[in-house]
Image (cartoon, rainbow, N blue to C red):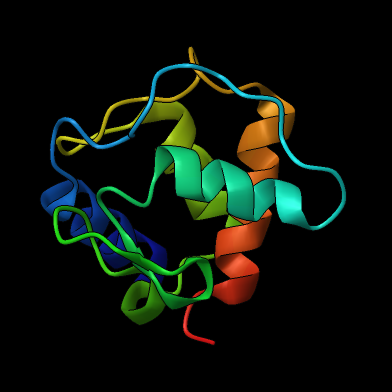
Length: 107
């Protein structure tokens, strides 16, 4: 039930045009890869204090605190106004973003 509510919130709050640059840059090595990918692709729309992001279009991820599976699904498929990133980011990059957001949201 909670996951369905979170998905509904995400779907209702994501807005078209989020995503920053469509150019794919190689991620930084180690633990910085998720942060770099988030900053390049998500920070224009989303707030995440750990990344220094204060976007106002999509949901505040510090408040939402989504888990990695939810982030992976939303980033891959898009929805509710958020574009899909499956054509911009590899599966490995999406996993890096999902892990970074889920570990750092709300911290």
